Image 1: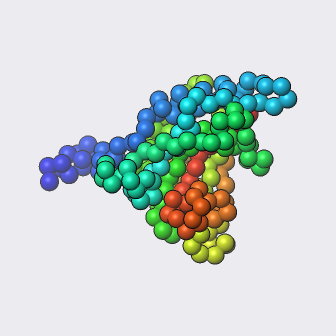
Image 2: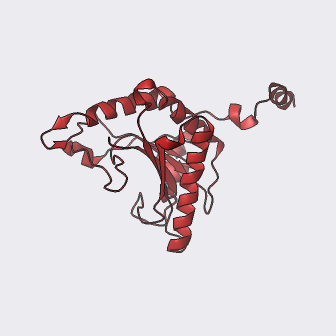
Length: 213
């Protein structure tokens, strides 16, 4: 009761103080600054990216959506670090349509079934993401916000849902100060699953990727 009263007195929403981000703005800033620097270095007729160690991917979702084995030990939201096999070649690849870099730090925001609602934890992480990309060295960088779904439902339904999810992330980032012209929102429906089982909940997500300049 006292805690609720204190929250109301301070004018702060309960979710704003109850949720912790799984990474910091500095993590975002440092990663993208390094990635941007490497992407600008020419290598013959093509540009290459020489990764330092592992590709980083953070999953915001339930323990089953992220890493069931590790979550069983920690009992909650977890950050997943995974290898990127394609990164070992050193090639910097970009989507031919959006110019978004396929390798690197991706923010994965998972959703409940048939929902485009951002969880408090997802919002906490997006606030850190927004702070990280506000660094002066990144102020000209643009990002693609990609919406994805699992395979349950029709192609048209999933296409619309993926667009709604990407838009939810974009609108939240804009609401916390990110310039709208730095964000491009696209929906891929169920056409680009993250895992082989198209119906796996891990495929319900939004990814934020750096646009190759």
